[in-house]
Length: 193
Image (cartoon, rainbow, N blue to C red; front, side):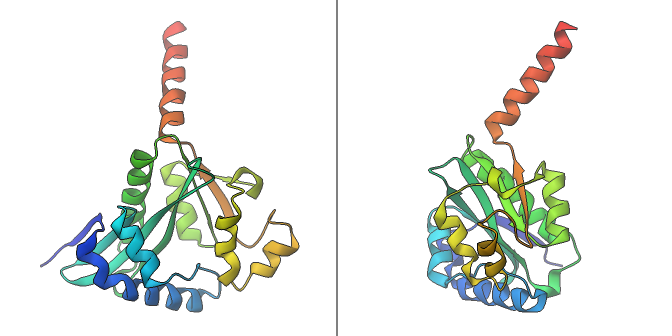
């Protein structure tokens, strides 16, 4: 039996870009909430720059996620997490998210990792990775990020509230370097006692 592989996407995976877009659109329709629509060309650019994670079972697309940077590299987000319905409820989203989270933190060690989501499952996964719920004011204020919310059916709520709240929950994790410094500080405190 062939197992699911999760890897950093590259030019070998361009053929899956449209299928990922279709999965994102279908999932957004089923949930009735926003997942930013993307074009295949956008996802191919993510693959070209080693900012995408793909899960495959043989030649079948099992899942996908990509990395975006915001605020001149101060923030990084793992976006577009999607799992093919035939592979759901197997822990695959958790595995993809973990690979994307680690890859983002290694690629951008000074950037805080954030996300916004309406998915309880994604919130649970994020919490396991070290994200904490925060007000939107603690997230990137990069206008380009918030522009991505325009394809969401709840965008009017975000606009009405001056980007301070919506149906999504904002979540933030420390950068890799911040986390290392916190662990070192804690270790030093323990040694001093």
